[in-house]
Length: 82
Image 1 (cartoon, rainbow, N blue to C red):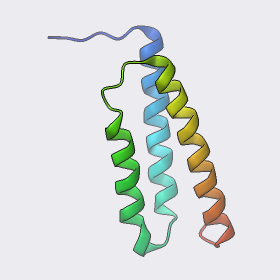
Image 2 (image 1 turned 90 degrees about the vertical axis):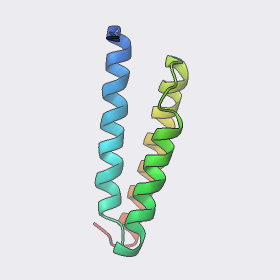
Image 3 (image 1 turned 120 degrees about the vertical axis):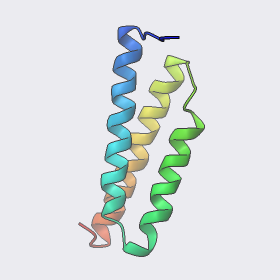
Image 4 (image 1 turned 30 degrees about the horizontal axis):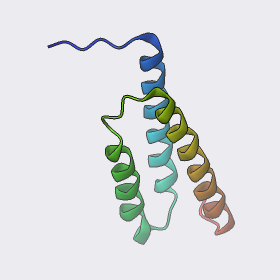
């Protein structure tokens, strides 16, 4: 069965995928001993909500994810992991 998304769902999906790619890029900057754990944590968070259809909740999760990545990015900058 083919599942078609409406435009808003498609746009949300692109935002989620962009956030996931950003998470992977940022974890690549982490110290070697912490990279795998950070990547797995990011993946687990995305997988936990994989089947969520509530667009409002997805927008909230994207916003929360951006804040958490911003915090991690700033922490890595402060520790000299650029």
